[in-house]
Length: 101
Image (cartoon, rainbow, N blue to C red; front, side):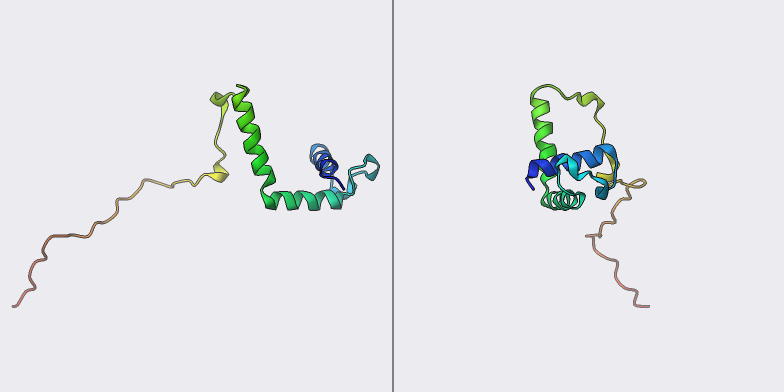
């Protein structure tokens, strides 16, 4: 099955929020199983992350992104909890002599 048709099948399933096995074969996108396996392979290969970066770069170059409305997804950023505690430093000064009494 050509990649383009699989991509169309993947987009159809995701857009219509249907189960993979319900993808109509008559549409010519292949079976839902085929599309799902291709999606899984592409995700593992980082295809969609690369595609996202390319789209952002092209939209930004064309002035089509409104960065004033951008937000950070907290699921990808480590959250620092509480106030940072100072690190204890080891003293470099001389120690008092041990008591001999």
